[in-house]
Image 1 (cartoon, rainbow, N blue to C red):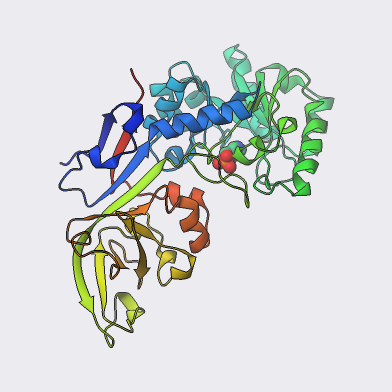
Image 2 (cartoon, protein in one colour; image 1 turned 90 degrees about the vertical axis):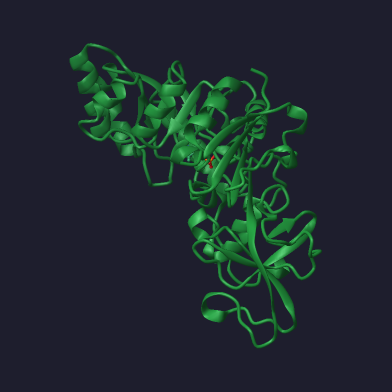
Length: 394
Ligand SMILES: *Cc1c(COP(=O)(O)O)cnc(C)c1O
């Protein structure tokens, strides 16, 4: 058994100096997760949110970065409210944050009430049947347990439609059996600052809040948090920005990168015109070219859509300060890169290649692959050796 996770504690000043970290000899690829950057990102969002509370969205294993480590670091920084997608994720958060407020975005599947109650979790109720089930459970228990109510303001994914609000207004008996601790909705275009949809959803949310004059309110994800004070209400719910991802399109990203992925060179060879490289033989050199095969593929979370020649859009990674580009297809466990311009003593067997980090960001990669940072992060594989960098004095 090799250890797959380690907490590294070191002074804040040089946490990003990866050369100081003793890398395990057996590791073929390493994902460094910088908890200092995570905390700085949360602190920044907390500041942007002004007087509103800043929660942490940690669904999908905290966007792939490790639920316990991420939620633990956020809790130590002062984050008091968490959102998960599933009950199981919420129970894991509870185990490391005993006094946190934890909402489950999936809402309530009938029969699951006791799984919430046992861990003091709060369902995000999205329909009248969910509201009725929670009301019934609380009424039977004789205890007004808290829950959030999700109202739909146009996304048509989850949440009560306006018609359901009207029916609650005419008969609010179910609401009397539990505590509506939060009323929330979700923006579907918040990454586009210019979109008129944001304003429309904001207005619809204000309309919906008239039904719940006393409840705390929350509308914004990461993008919404940057849309200004009108969007903050009592609580903001950022996810992607905590993890360093871009929240607003076509604007500089103010967040610090949290992840860095490095992988080792397994082999270097020279190919000549007439040779091909990789599956499908898609790469055909036109001159003598040095190729390094590195230990990172789509099973590690490196997107297969990054196959081929993306040279025009910048390097795919770095060996030291030398940019490198991918050639041929991404395979399950391997990628091949052109190291012709890298000094031979740097591009050798066992050397580390940075394929994701501050220089080639998650967003750089996903822009080229035609997807989004959310997908890349949440698919990072547990096969990659993880190192959590934590410079916070304990
Ligand atoms: C995922 C999610 C968030 C966080 O969204 P980001 O864009 O990652 O900030 C907030 N609210 C809801 C309802 C979500 O599903």
